[in-house]
Structure formats: C-alpha cells, structure tokens
Image (cartoon, rainbow, N blue to C red):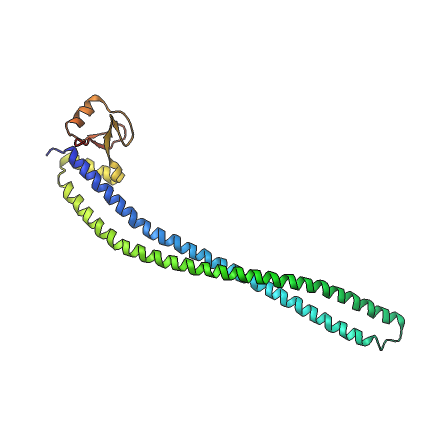
Length: 235
C-alpha cells in the first residue's frame, strides 16, 4: 500500500487537533487551580489583617486601662494633698501628680494615634473581605466554565480520535510502525510540511533527491530531525 503525502497531511492535521484539544482539557484544571490560589491568597490576606487589627485593639485597650489606672492614682494623690503635714511630702506628691499627668498626656496622644490607625486598618479589612468575595465569585465562574467546556472538549476529542483511527487504517507495514513510533515520541511534532526546500520542523535544507520524492507526493523522513515530511501538492 502506497502512503501518500495527502494521508500524512491528514494525519498531521488530526494529530494537531488532538493535541490542541488535550491541551485545552489539561489547562482547565490548571485555570481552576490558579483561581483557587488567588482565593487562598485573598483569604490569607484577610486573616493577616484581622490578626494585626486584633493586636492593635488589644494594645489600645491596654493603654486605655493604663491611663485610667494612672488617673485614679492622680485622683487619690490629689486627695492626700490636703492631709499632708510636711512640706517635703507635699512637694513629692505634687511632683508625682505632675509627672503622671504629663505621662497621661503622652499616652493619650498614643491612644488617639492608635485609634486612628485602627480605623484605617478596619477599612483595609473591609476592602480585603470584598476581595475575598470577588475571588470566590471568580473561582465559581471559572469552575462552571471549565466544567461546561470539558463536556464539549471531551466529545470533540472522541470524534477526533475516531477520525484518527480511521485515517491510520491507510498506513501499513514498516511505515505504520515508524509513524506510530514517531507519534508516540513527538506527538503532532512527528510530522512537518515542506517549507520551500526545507523541513519546517528543523529548517534544514533537503537534498534534490528527497525533494524529487516529495514532488511525486511521497512522504519522507527528514535526515536531520527524523520528522515525516510531506508536501502540500494542492498549493
């Protein structure tokens, strides 16, 4: 049985379709996984912001408690001023009251600054939570899209594989074994169309003898890369 260039060209076309469909099927789960990673990153970001916000609030509560305790001490010391008889003790209380009052002024500024930062972080948290919802919605959209597309692609792949089996019936003998070996190793890249006077797979020039065989519609093996070369005589 003579193998024609048109048959190899057909096989090349079908193998390319098969490779493309398989590639699309493989990319589906990868696309879903990428969207899943984006959602995980968004959730992790929310968790980090939330933890930071919690620490800031605990810090603010601690400072407010510290200021309240110091105010109570100041109030107690102010009451003791009227009962102190010695000038030295009176002055010591006055100094302590002044020092703690100044310390509370500094602490009040720190608390105010911290509360303002908390407001900003709470806004950031809201935005991050919105980002999580967007990422989750996008993941759900992609999952549905990939699932719907998978049904179509698998159906098309079954059709193409059946077409390939039918086309391969035109192969026989050693050529069939060589074709099977090449396709198993290289897939669609096992074949290449003649481009000018070169193999379009490796772009090496072919000898006049090989070009003559191609011009007669006979496929050949590229002596450089081993691909099955054919010439589209319909051009």
